[in-house]
Amino acid sequence: MSMPFSDEELQAPVENLIKTKIAPMMAQDGGAIELMQIKDGRVFVQLQGACNGCAASGSTLKYIVEKNLKEFIHPEISVVNVLPGMEDEILNG
Image 1 (cartoon, rainbow, N blue to C red):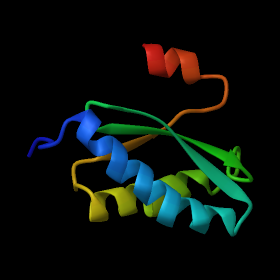
Image 2: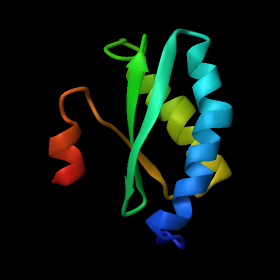
Image 3: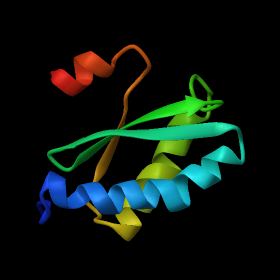
Image 4: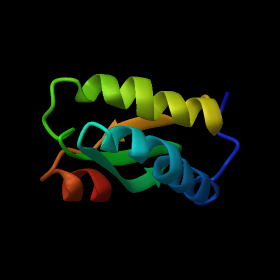
């Protein structure tokens, strides 16, 4: 199955879901998330606050961020965590 939406069409629903559902969950533990870019159906985010460098950040990415995006937007969405300092390399590469 391929992504039936363009990256531009995904922007608003992804932003909304992150802002209204995902970010508040992460904030309970002192974490934050920023949507960096959507490219080819891949959602690039940066985990921030307490989530940055946390041992559980991989689980947070998979079981909170990716799970919600797949469930509420499209099952083919994938999520990529952009580590601090890697923004230019990933987003322009």
